[in-house]
Length: 520
Image (cartoon, rainbow, N blue to C red):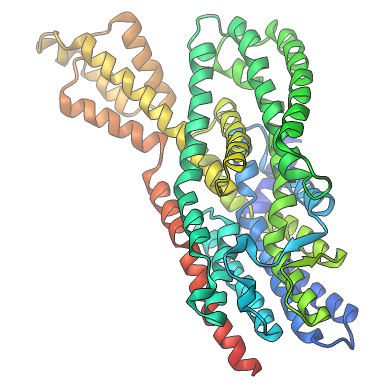
């Protein structure tokens, strides 16, 4: 079984299969072209709708390749799921969320960023939506190629904004809404990071820093997992089934609470059974979070499919509505074939091109274990709930990555404190002691992160004489910074976030002018 999993993971990431993956994508786009052509044969605007359907399918592929990594990346990076299993799980739940809870009607003007009153020309509206969809897809494709997880919502928002301005001038945009979206670039990751770091700190102080971790885990883990169950129960009621039924926050919270009570008793029994055989260490505690992480990845994928499929099919549904009804509508019905294009495209993009971003989120920013990954998933659900109740625009991508950076920076802080405490212990030692301890310092510099932590803990526990100069202490801190959170990834991802809206807006404006020039 392990060999089969390894083979699947290798096949999904090998450069030798790149042409095969591109071929499958092109085949899907051709099938969409032919199917829509057959479906709309003889109808006015058939060729334009066929082209829009292909672009919508291309957008869905890119959403699957880029955005879904946030849902399963931490679970893969922590070892709770293999890459192949994560892709299979996410693909099924993404498609299920899109088809079951994706809704029957979608807003055609995403987030209210442009005024529909300024769009009376149906032909111009169709060009606008086509340009926005293609620009968002191209930007996502570029970001995925660069290995930068970005917000698909912001990509399509930028596309609609840029094409809208090109069609109706600067006055058509609602700049107050755009200001709120820009604020979310800071709000989303900071809130996600703080919440993830808070729960990781609670778990460390109440369980991992206790001498009897098993006894502490029996008390704390069921409560923490129950909190997660409450958050996800509420989250799914608010976001996952909002198209199936209308649910207010109080009802959603009560449903989540009922789920949490059941999960609490289930986890308490499970932890009690495992306590007899689990090791009294971090590995034993980590094992308790495996199944909660798997369920979190599945539920996040379902909710993502239900919500973000609209980024691919919203403009396509708007184009279909405009061509069939001959008028600009602020809301459009979603035919089943449009929903299928979005659902299959997302699942296909995840399977073919998702592994690169899954690796980035799961292992290339900071080292994740199951406890840290659990805190990131919990943070994602809680942050969305808080933001939705406060009316704050947030991005699930930014939240998840903020959580990853949050747990990484917390680890840096906690580990740096070991160096500070160690310095206090040895500050009064005589200079001749340093020569005797050179071997310790040499081993420390070449140690892994886990070995560094163990050596510092042992030094603190046994009062080992390790006098460090200020320069040496800074070097140890720098080693921790580079090992625990990769600054290069932080800078690259933050830069991609900032330029997502203006980049997709500029591309959409250029594409709109190009389309208008070709079609007029």
